[in-house]
Image (cartoon, rainbow, N blue to C red; front, side, top):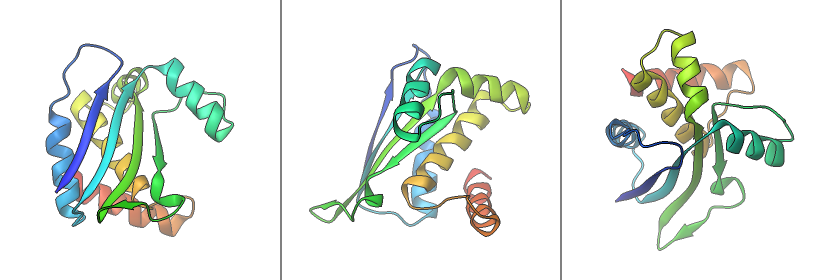
Length: 140
């Protein structure tokens, strides 16, 4: 049992395809019994969060706040993974820049954010190779 909530604070557009992407990622990663949220927001909100929690005063595409970074938080053996925040305007700009569809770009950001919640990172070249290989497999 995995449970997650998608909160769309940005606009009235539907991004129902995210559900399929999340389920595929969780199956690929063999994650069971977890909860997390995906929050779709605007540039101002993500810039505020980026400044407050990372001391970087600029817009970014995705921020992940992993609860397991603090300790292995579990509730009745359910992993409480954390929150993923995605800027929809930034995602749209990147989709145009990289010649991706909205679905491709948002799917990438959701999987990228989820991998961060699970402890994957790309601070070193080895970490980047591992994380991006997993992303690529999930998004095939």
